[in-house]
Length: 351
Image 1 (cartoon, rainbow, N blue to C red):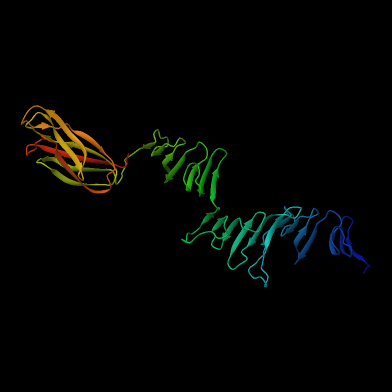
Image 2: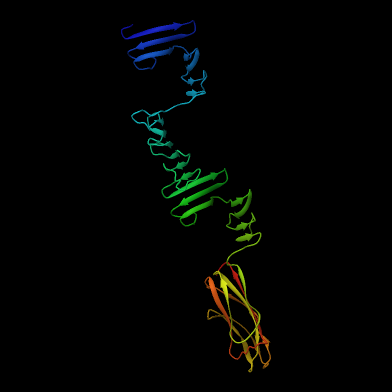
């Protein structure tokens, strides 16, 4: 026993090991007990004739290893953070701080009931969350999974969020933006920032390509038009209706047809005669409104003449059933010796 300090030395010619009690502190330690070596030799703690913990001469600590490669290395074991009885759900945290004491980052467990892990940078608000089901939230402490997906990655921002997939040359993005972005209206935007194409694929094969100039290819990765399709196109608004097919005519031929609301191209042909020279022909009426005419000029009286076939483009016809009627223009006579055909081609666009 010493008045202010005492030392137990265990030495060889090379090693100076000590157990020290010092009221003023020693070797940088505060007042208390100090166990260690004076020279550059490790300190080891052992049980059952086996070293369990080693402190190297440079301060590195190894548990389960005599040669730790980091400030703390745990070999073949676990590091456990366990909550105290007074706070049974709060298992503590790992803190990262600067030399001045400022917080650089924090990893901690869910302090309330249920499993979960939080990670933040610089504050105590979670930036990344892993919930009890393995769902990951970035920007949210509660990854949204009300629909019951097996796994969820929930990337959340206040007004916008971006998922980047990048190389040295390609900047690909999946974005949500409440104000719109890249000329798109508010909503979801998927695409590339630079002059690179966007492709959609199934079965390890590209099916749709949007080129850097905005051209779209279906079945073609180098589209040469605004829409370049290899293969057939099907649409509920791409229809062909044979309204009349060589029908023998009398005044007021009428029939119905259906449309999906697209652009209509009507092909109409027929014939008739007149008692006075001049124009003869027929009006093509849809729902009582004249949409076009097929006609010809003749100075041959009582002689049946074919009207010049005409292709009529019609827009603004709503989806549903409509009535088409052929009405002779003045001085035109139609009878059972005249034959009429009308075909309606509907295309899946409008002007």
